[in-house]
Length: 365
Image 1 (cartoon, helix red, strand yellow):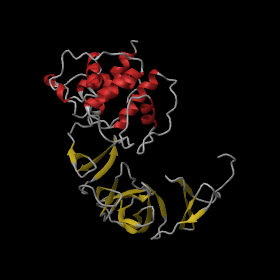
Image 2 (spheres, rainbow, N blue to C red):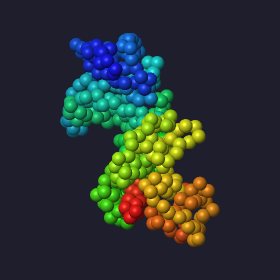
Image 3 (cartoon, rainbow, N blue to C red):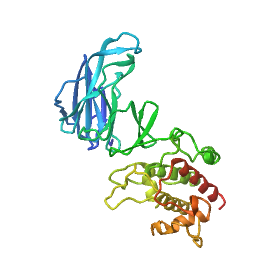
Image 4 (cartoon, one colour):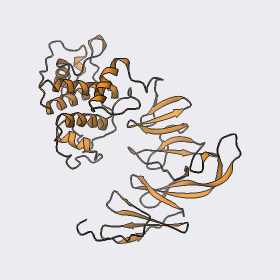
């Protein structure tokens, strides 16, 4: 970067940056593949893999994939005869090139590999037939989540599995399930992808003001990282000349919005140095973050609590003033029966609505 000197010869097909600062080099030539590491000085070290394959790539969490191709049945539709075509089985390796799993179904066509997110990876296994075209087909196996040891976490009988809105969502037939990453699952209501009628006007206003995020399931609880993204969108809307995010302050998260939100005092981490970006927030946590966001934008609010919530005793001392301050200025209200329900979840659409309300209130100053 300082001199422009070439430290790795321009003879590799791909170069990827690893978490430890090394580079992963791949070379495809005459239907054969070779893989190497390179360090910042340009020293190249061949990688000795336990199996031979054509594809080699990163899987996250310092793990890798090798694609081992073999003739497998492919059909354009279930009713049509299958023909044999090269489709890979993905072999998952750890950082020491030891096999973690060797039974992961690959896709036909361009290899699209799963990836570890929040310590888990969705995989498909057990396919006996691939359906689609040679440019893209998927197997008929089932899906599940595995951890870094390769073991399934929870059931692995899903028809599909995706990372959506910072949550793992599984599908069985037409039913959708939110997975907690610990083996538990909650069936989502049929209207999970629909916005609530009470929220539609403010959600549309937030979109018009460009302080919203696109959530596929707006009724899911929002995660810490996505709340930070919302908060920073509002902050930068009001303060367009805001400085760039500082260096990452958390051991498990380098997201720019999280870093900036932390620098502004909107969010804090945990005593162990983590941020836990994909952990869902509670209503009292949302109130505290909204209060700090509102203050960072120059807003002022008193924490009048002459009419305490019926469940005031359940409020954390660290959140009580924020809960009443947000009620006082109309950003965040209570629930039924004059309760606040501080430990309940806070949905993605609720977060967008309250950020829009904060924007409307700040505009008055």
